[in-house]
Image 1 (cartoon, rainbow, N blue to C red):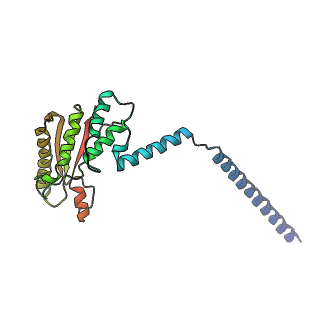
Image 2 (tube, one colour):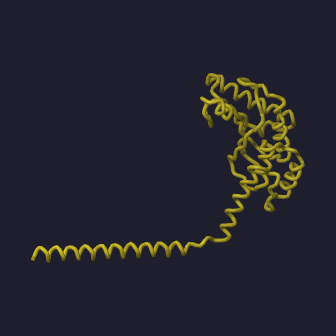
Image 3 (tube, one colour):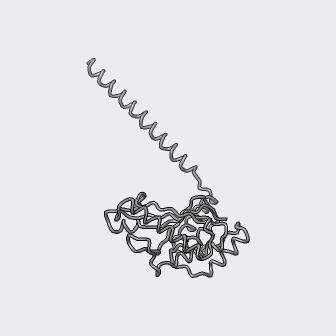
Length: 223
């Protein structure tokens, strides 16, 4: 009899504890739901994020469609209108600069990349049919006389490291020489070759080698 009473008491105690636990869980869930309901997205912030996303998408595909920022100085707006008359090829260095300049957000260290410029493999010989992007860069630098850049040349791992560094430096120097020949002050252009030190692709695959064999532009000063 005593054992039955004890068993019943334990069972009732367990039911009571489980009831308290379930009640606590329900209360916590209700509170969480209430807190979630209180979160309201600021319409202005939502619009800003959407505008930023749209701006990034436009720059990625066609910077020429991006409006010139009203916050820019008059001389910058004039320079941009002059560049808008140029027929830069899609995704090219000139188009990248155009999108960057129109946005009006200039950060030290921003980088761009020659898209179409080609060298004979393993050499610093520029394939002249691809040199139009150097002309585009010269046009940009003419319109923005305070623009200072670093030409950063990289290679794949086809050559020995020392030779890769030598070739990459020669490529950066060759681009600078062409810019200087077009009237750009040499003091505005720093040329640096890194060889195969900083790959961004897999050198065991041809696609990776093509990605690694590149010349980037780092902006030191824009306006």
